[in-house]
Image (cartoon, rainbow over all chains, first blue to last red; front, side, top):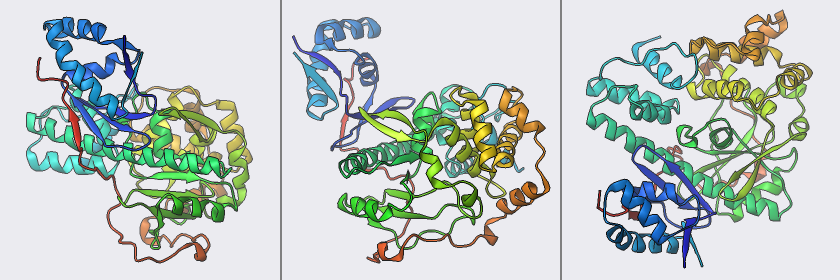
Length: 88
Length: 347
């Protein structure tokens, strides 16, 4: 199973309602808002999609499967951008 | 101090233990709010302003709150871009076998403040070993930076430096010292390299000065001119309160380098400006320190207003290639965010 965590070569800052991320090597500045901020906070340790979904489902009182369906493309996008690491 | 000066100072003191300054008790009207935000940005304390609003300590309308969030986000975006540039340069310097130490804003953000988002900065300041500017300059050129031929006139005691800018007008300044003028002779630049610290930035180890030398350098900046930036004073307080500075060591270094009066004066100035009630060993020593007549004279000279400043001595002219670099605002630059992940629309 794939586990996701914050990229090691990522510069970031957290503000009141968002997290700004920038790959240290090369890339674009990205802003995470809403539940994206909670996602970034969870990614301090490697977690599988199921674990991430379970925690966020509890926090936001939403069905875990619905959360997982939302999270997967976001995690894949952040991984492509070099902001998140995905390891098997 | 005027109305905005008082409020801006209170903002700069936000979160400090024992600070006795009051933030505005009620929301400000739009013109006053806008003026306050501009003052905060000028003093580099917009991060503290945003924190005070987010913490509920500074009353604001919804529109004002959203506006300061955006202002702060813009500053932070600029800081991230500067840090990315810094890391690229650190790697190039490392490959060239050249040690550089990062000064001021970046180091302060990551070492002196519990949340780096609170401490914004508008450029990168790098200290290079004396006599190695000619080695350093081509490395910056290879990284796509060009010298800024019209270095701004700074205070008469500022160290000589060389500014470089990139395509986004992000500014990197090279220095061989942390102080200029006659004080530089009492503090040989080589002494600054005796005991470096490091911090981690996106997985890369970045060198900076030791906590004691950082405090002395911060005190020199906070002593300069009649009205230093509030963030310079805040940096002094963060260093004094932070627990990293060896009090005996910093006093010993200040004595060896003939800078005790500056160390004491800056700490006193910071404590008075922020009306700090808490007393620690260094603030107690600073309050009790009496400069000699010669020290008092030098302190007074150091605090001369900008109208009496002289152009700073430039580094070797052959390194300045006039390419018609467009000078403009080299403050924080926020490149439009091309990608944004909302994290889903679900609550």
